[in-house]
Image (cartoon, rainbow, N blue to C red; front, top):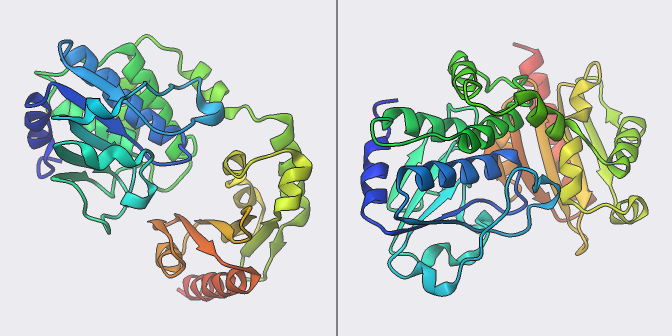
Length: 319
């Protein structure tokens, strides 16, 4: 932990009166937790500074946090920090490049090395965990509030799948325990994050009924745009069902392929063992070793992705 630039990040923050924090498009709890948690941490620690968070709509995660109104003029002489975003095309709000300096804080593989400082730890369970580590490394000068703790806890819970994913370490659990010492209600956060709409519940039934599982444990399901229209759902709302195939016996790795309005497919790839992010990279995506995203121009490319996952599954099972 000491080799990471926690001190350098703090020193750069001190230099600026305005700090604007971005995150990735179509945010998940870790994107909002790390972004919002960092903003709350900095607001309490530096009350004379102007601290903002910006990005597109947060959907049904507005119980976590919402965005601030940030003008173009605010970026003049501002420090910009981007959390939980592996590559620049995914940054929400293209004005991120309008500040004086840029810091990247992330837990994805650092394939796109952007920014003047990169605080990247791909061994961390979540970006929210990194924000807590940043606080701990500088706790003589930083103040963690109840609201910051709530947001960071939510981010960790979200990206660890409620502490079920392999990215959960003993350090993750210690960090979560530390956050729980603050005066928010953890089970309230858990319950809010666990609730799904009736529309998503119906989609969950469709996923389970239409999941195709191969003999070596590779599963897939296609969600056509007509189906989304039938269920009155957006692509963003389908993110909450990505873990569902993993609950089915015999599933080792899987893909959920959501057709976009333009006709191509957004691919959500997950694994319980085989390393899949190289497959994602070959198909205009990337991500974590066992949780990645990609894009397929048609069903033919989806079949190529499934074949590549199948080869990885065979290799993993033969070990």
